[in-house]
Image (cartoon, rainbow, N blue to C red; front, side):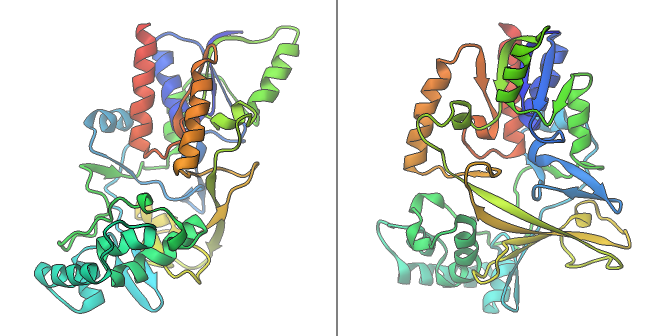
Length: 373
């Protein structure tokens, strides 16, 4: 078969691009090294509960165009992301708001909370923060930092806060209202029936081959008696892997998930997301999936999320956008610009963390530009 585009990866970026190019009359072929579509937003049903297999994904955006677009593929419920944090025997609301401060200090008014935070900030003030700890203390003071930032951050990055660069947290949102809604975006929710259905609809009649590695596909396809041909490659995998790491490896943080079905337990923690902020607790959070869709099933499924060091062959989740990696990515980006008939897109292809709405916006922008050319 002759295709206009070979799309490597069936995550959100690749699926949106395939959908839009199909509308434009282009023929696409999708491949994915995993045995399922959807990338990290893949969901699957277990005991009647949609499981977020690669961590919690809550859709939120202030971009009406993106919101209208994604609602064309699914009905979204009215889920509001309101995580809570456990520190020892204490339970706090997130993001940092008046419910948090009232529990922490026994106060009631924004003026009282501001006074305590400002006093603690002054006590810890460093004119030029040299590391993440000094930066956080400058932003929120010692109590919030010690209980809700320090341990969680150190688990997430695998390093002490005094060893992490200050720029990682340019700000920590502090709200002086009794509002537990984590996001301030206008639109928010979870697709009824899970994210996989969205990807299925986006891909439509586009042929998909799963369990297929890009380099293996090229080798086997070129050796075939009647090889598939394609004009352009959209590559959404790791940009350094594409170039066989010739300039060195970009760095990531990875995750490990421990899923557990709790038969006969209809409600384990009362909330979809509970963070564990002590360094001594090995996981960063527990997700109870049924609460994303207000489930009333007799059983429940939870997932413990463990941060992990990344090594080649592991699943890369979070780019480490420090000076070393940003410089290395720019060098790979120059190689990418010179690569004929290959486009790099998505979180791994562009080495940056994207919220889902930004992924969609970027994919739509790319598809629109190519449709006009």
